Image 1 (cartoon, one colour):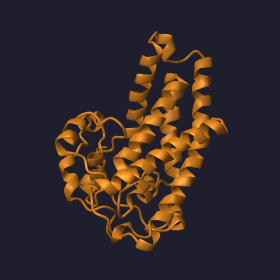
Image 2: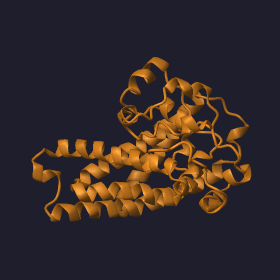
Image 3: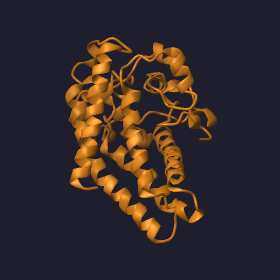
Image 4: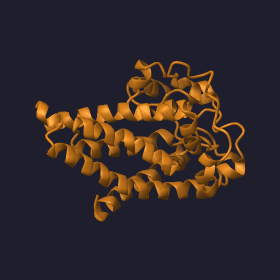
Length: 270
């Protein structure tokens, strides 16, 4: 990805974040409270770091797609049109992203990394890219793997990453969605209410609704929790040091400190 392309994409994403931040003030899902204080600089720091990392990873993903096409592998050899190739790429990559996300809840060592995201005591637009760099690398592996193996087109990867970035902003935004509309959309799409449940302090809810774009994977694979639960949840993680969860340095060091959450009794057979 060139510098100009990166700046264009970053401008679009930042503009959307600003737009949804404005909408949050008009139709908030939860009222502002003390949980929001002191987290802005930490979230901003990880957001900047995530943007920089994605710049390099996007370029690498494009090279992988180009390499796969030159070796004769790919959807194009099967005959589908480019629009269909892109649609299939989005569906396939979203499935692998679901698997990557679920693995971060199932494997204690990966949870050490992912808890930087879940430890936010409030969820709004600024939570979107509150992500440890190691999580970005792990998710990237689950994109380049199928991209290379299946020979997904570069355009399909670009479209998927863009839709994913936009929906990530939407699903984290602290906005109120009309319940009947949310009920319909969440049949196939990951809505803000659906993802809010995933940020619950209750393990049974945290360990559900892993979807990134399509809700169908949670529904088919048995990890869907009804979106109505979003109205009664408390965000964050129990037993976390508030000074750490509100600190940029604390979040970066989080995977290397303390004990991972115990899943021995929860993920038997996964």
